Amino acid sequence: MAQELIASNYVATAEQINTGALMLGAGLALTSMILVPALAMRLGLSASLTGALRIALMKASNRATTVKPVVVDTQQRLLR
Image 1 (cartoon, rainbow, N blue to C red):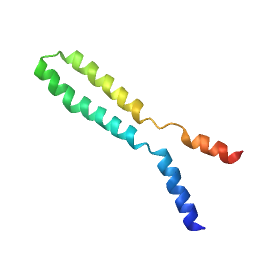
Image 2 (cartoon, rainbow, N blue to C red):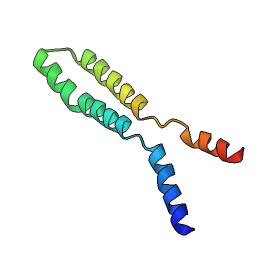
Image 3 (tube, rainbow, N blue to C red):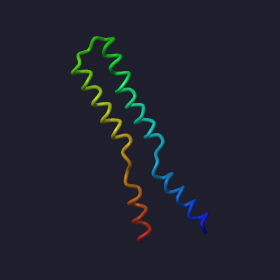
């Protein structure tokens, strides 16, 4: 009985974690913090354009890693 509860807990946790989204979000965040300023300096872009690119990449990173309400759907199924 206890092992079944633990196994179902692992399955629920695995459903909530989207590894691909986390990797994409981390890549975009890394790009916005390190690569964009380095490339902008190399190309001679203005600070305002560099800042705008960094903001756009951080917003994209946030959207990629935002967790969808999977738990709500699972809870609704259990209540039915």
